Length: 148
Image (cartoon, rainbow, N blue to C red):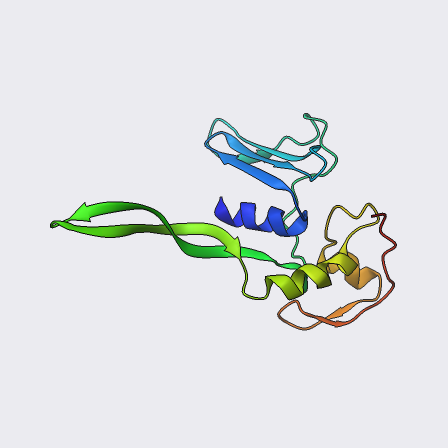
């Protein structure tokens, strides 16, 4: 589920994502519940956002690469001892991209009208934006008038 956490942290700037065995919840900067995923009887994640009164629905549509501030990285999550030597326990964790500072600035121009969510590549293409094959912005179309 780390990939979901990364996607939602990139899609909703400043949000918090709670990932647990029973599902995943996304809360916006203002504390409102944005997305709710729950595991069903077979263990599959199911979008329950509507039932929980969330403003958004589960959506993994790609967002522009220029807005991807977070990524999965290898990080230390603890230590263990093996053959008398201490070792770092490494695992995949959510971290900031090397270009995070640049991308945070660029992301501001890619937000929806509410200023709370990054628009998907498809939504931006519909507004005349152009992207390369990797999802980088080639040219901007109609600007989004976001309320800050």
